[in-house]
Amino acid sequence: MKVVCVGHSTYDTTLPMDEYPTENIKYRLEGHIECGGGPAANGAYLLAKWGMDTAIASVIGNDFYGDQIIKEYEKVGCDTSLLEKHEDHYTTSSYIIANRSNGSRTILSSKDKPIRKLNRELNIDCDVILIDGEHPDSAEELLRHNGKDKISVLDAGRLNTDTRHLGKMVKYLICSKDFAEEFSNTKLHANDLDGLIKCHKELSAYFNNQVIITLEDKGSFTFIDGGYEVIPSIKVKALDSTGAGDIFHGAFTYFISNGYTLRETIRYASITAAISVTRVGARYSIPELKEVLEYDEII
Image 1 (tube, rainbow, N blue to C red):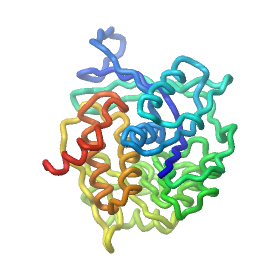
Image 2 (tube, helix red, strand yellow):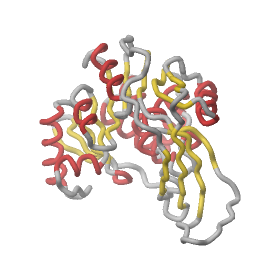
Image 3 (cartoon, rainbow, N blue to C red):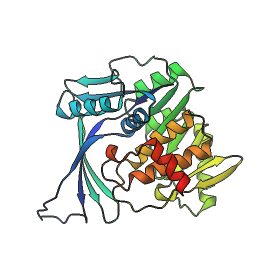
Image 4 (cartoon, one colour):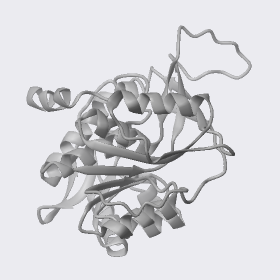
């Protein structure tokens, strides 16, 4: 199966700390972690690492960070032929403070102007599509060319005009709790089933596809096998939640593309994301596929 991922590329520098820093104090850290990032970009990395024929369509700068991102993809066998270096663009750089005491992360990003369309046309055939709303014109072109019968996933982290539009074109809309709350103008709680059902119905009526609402460490909510259900995550000690959502979406795309049921897919994606938060650094925290499957057998 051929997978094409369209989305934002960034280069992350993660600074692990035991507490959130106080202003006007100098801290000396034992080390830091550098790796590529970005929602669909991390998904592409996971899919290639797990053995799928995967291409990443994105824009990077002709700079050090862009070169490092290419090297990372090459290590896992990800196709970079759709990855464009633009001379007048700089690669987004993000600095992440990872609070190891509670697993939270604070992200500071320096991002160049958005690019709606890649130079190359994306009227190419593929079997699976993962997008995150970046380069929306190219994402739409790819979706239209392949049709809605293909497996297509939108990582809907932020509600805006583009994600509203693209969300109607995909088979699976996986939206964050923030996205769902802003869309429905309601506050969601994992134990408020009525509120979740109401919000899910509004999302489903608007987007007309399979909607999954992620509830962070509480799991995911969806309509499955004729009923509404919270599919719980597993409990772990979080060290760094950076990239956990991206990893969930990448793992979801893998399992749903390889014949797993929706419930199995969400469960395994949750396990993958949960394992990742026990480690520092988004791409370095991605477990091996075997580890995920064996972890499920253990628990």
